[in-house]
Image (cartoon, each protein chain N blue to C red):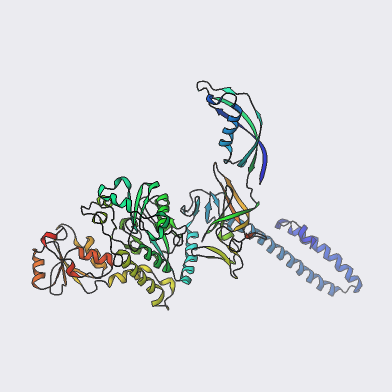
Length: 176
Length: 445
């Protein structure tokens, strides 16, 4: 799920950035530092949308660096257990398949793929129903339900299932 | 029904419930008996029936109670956590211990499976493979399918290669590549394209190398530019479970259906029987030096292995043979009983069938001859090794034509061959012409 929230961060800035562009430099550094990172609490920071407030700088003794507390608004993405998500399949093998939704890596084990879908190996491995009407392969788009999530410093791992009503392939790359 | 659902489930109160039911039933019987003019005996009879009904109800309740308990215990036992992804169980999503099971990192980072799950996957895979008539083939890269060297290891005589490298735009038709971003030059073994193409019909192929992951991926691109052979089955040294060892524990395949091509026997100590040992392919001079050979490398001789009679071509014949034995020769035999290791052994045993070999001054005197590499090779090839000469002997293997046994062989017109004859036979899977491996003093090295 996406959220638009306000976060705070203490930014250390080198004295060479001081001057009339201090604020711009601060924001540029903030974007570089924060966008694309993950935190267990808030999830993946997609983009910074604005600066609410830059606090008073505090000079660090000995180094000359200055710490500014910066409050900023940003869009974050955090997956939740039970959430329904759409993702693109990146890899299919006999253990199940892997899918990606932005920074989120999702694994759907073959235990959680409907029993009537069977694994077919070959140069384009896939899971197919016995009548061949539904096929999951690389680049398929699937709708899945998350049953477990873990957010690391840099990555988000999820376990998903498509063994439920209205889950599974939503767009087949071969017919598109 | 409402009574049942409202009633407390635990057994201590079931007596209360029974008496409550009794009371209820009693009132209902009294109502009905009012109509029936109160026959004493009939009333008694009906009471007995009701009593029985209550008992039945109680039993029902007990059954319900126990099923409820079973269900809760099932909920706990239902997930055996057969594997994990990023520290979460792949079935229920719960956090599990990070170190449980075997890491299958070559497929995806953070994926681990425990052994019952591996067995399950291997069994499922076996069925699949039997339907497709395919087995598994594990291929080593260096010295087996190709030879690589760092650019700074190349000698000045080899510089001509740099200008003769094939274009990376047209990988399919090239065999010598310059990979500048890796500072490497790679030469594919002759016949490798044809080999992979034909082997792909019979096998699901894996790459298993002692090189690191980026190297393995890069080489896979050269061998398989169309990405049709290996898929995600590229295993590098970072993915193994033991240092300096290759193992089938990370491979999702039944051991009885796996053949391995590798030039290093010691890497596969647990799976020697699956291994087809390859003659090392040394194209670059640095590669020869690494293994302590003083001879000129193929690159310096400006030659190469034979395309159609080289090691890969002869191994492909063996692979075809084993494959057809596995799938065609005895269809009555249950597939689960078949084992490529047995077939491989029997194919190898036919090569020198009937040969009786004596070694002359090949082993150091203090060395037990049965444990020498050549002795073992000869026995695996189906030959009988003897310590002393007698008339049944067919071959004498020697480095020197002047030993007693060598002279005996010449006198008795037995084959007198160089030890290389056994090695060549072993690697090429074919009895070599003895005359090509003469023993003479000048050629003793």
